[in-house]
Amino acid sequence: MIKRDEQVYSRFWSSHRFGKLSGEEFKRTVEVWEKKVLLLPVASNLSSNAMLKALG
Image (cartoon, helix red, strand yellow):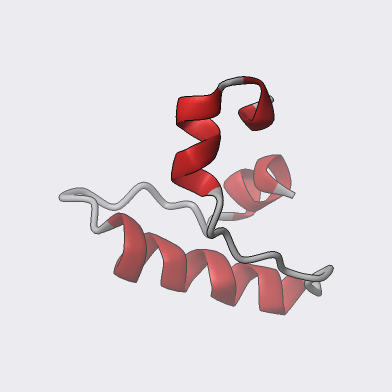
């Protein structure tokens, strides 16, 4: 879907591709991403079991 819109695609061209992450690796990656990349003013609890299931 991103490739369909040139403006959107150009913003994502330098993305990092992950291999398949195990359950615990996936959870740790989501936790780091939420805390150090998103920097949300209020925690979104992305590493909760329900959210991890949806993200997976």
